[in-house]
Amino acid sequence: MLMGKYNNSIDAKNRMIVPSKCRDDLGYKCVLTKGDDQCLYIYPMCEWDKVREKLSALPTSDKLIRAYVRKIYANAVECEVDKQGRLTLPTELREYAGIEKDIVTVGMIDRMEIWSAANWKDNENAATEETDDAKLEELLRQYGI
Image (cartoon, rainbow, N blue to C red):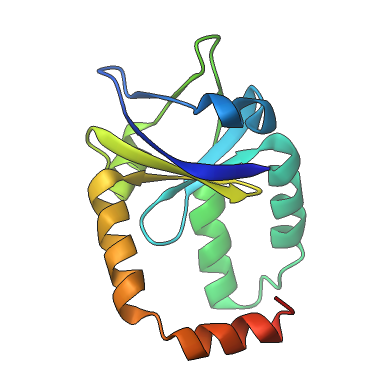
């Protein structure tokens, strides 16, 4: 299971170090793509296969669905984690996520998220300000949590 929050940075060759606690779950081949909220998603291959199946089952007649699938697939790249545990972040994806140097990597059960440190801080602050505890509790209760 991918979990935890890790602070790191990218090197001069645009490589990040995959947190050592996550390497076994991520594997040496993975898929990197644009995520929501201006972050990047890294999927282990086994999880990417599940995402692919779910996306392929969506109705292509819906314009919003087509746009979402296009966002995910057009920007997806298969990556390899090298022997030192590094992963190269393509320029276009780094620019989308606003990554210049410092990053925050977050384990999200079945995937990892990569954030620029600044965007992560902004996202955390916004989530804290916008959270209505009563609404969140009700929503979680609806999902059986």
